[in-house]
Length: 415
Image (cartoon, rainbow, N blue to C red; front, side, top):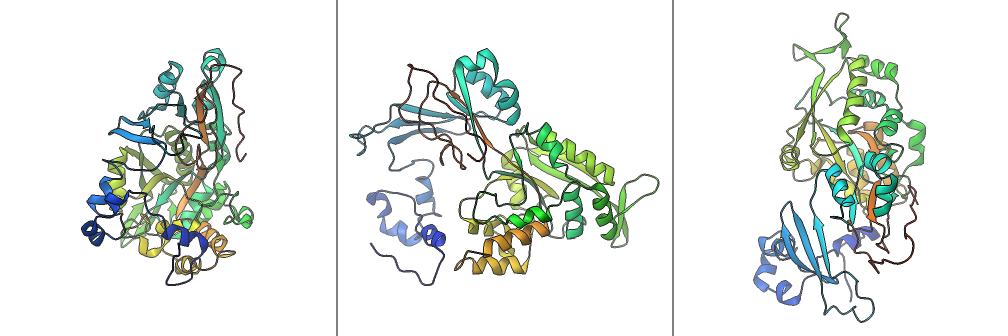
């Protein structure tokens, strides 16, 4: 089979252009629907097969999807690979449980075989005889990033100035957060790229905006946000009005590691004379606010794929409308570099890393490790930088096994 492209593209973009969902001929061959949606991605007809009537080519078939409850898969007995290595599980049930602590208790009670946990559960609760009789632990470094996105589109008076954003980065006490919140299991972030990848710029470490409240105060002074001698709060005259530096940060309810992180950050901001008010929203509500750019600061959790060009959707100027550049970040050099990155790679994305870290469109907090507890009788689960290999969790191979010792060897971060 041969594919012709109109112009030169970097290898990962050529592969991305060929990333179509797998569909059978009797569905994809509908001439009228293909004419209406040649991308096979945007029309109600094709989207239905991504949710309501899921169709794939794997060894399990889609049975049921109860919103905010469960997804059920059953072994496809007629799959062409079954003559070689059929999966041992007949049914797989993926359950929705946003409360991590409750999910862990249900795991101990035998309701779940695999769950994703936070650092507190992993370090403090998944221990002792009760846990060891049931489960084992595994972890792996990831590119999943917790950050605070600043709204720089001019709708507030605070974050348009890079001096302010750099000052707030100096107010972030990463060591304290990683010790108290991450229990040594998470790692500090220096931008969207992570150090295991080829697009990471090692020179960033020499330019790191470390915790330094005096330097932060200097930068705020330079930006015109001056501390009131009586109250200590910072003010600036904006369009003839004296404005106090007090902003609201919106974040998704249910992420257990976010509130304690914000508590530490809030205290250092207060020492600078900056007030941060926090408010939790349900994920659907917060996503609508993000799309409408209806926020001042936004607690965001997300990751990047192995293709760094995907970051264009978060950082390019023209991704403000219709993309994921929710904070309105704009740097002409970064825009230019993404265009160059379509055709060459060696230096392009490392320069993007440097530019974006200097601009601080977001306060980069830490990369969350993938932390799992699993039934110790399950074999064949592999952890990687995308979790248990793309799917959460990957269908385990050769399980369950009720004989022999536990199978798991905990993998260290980055291993």
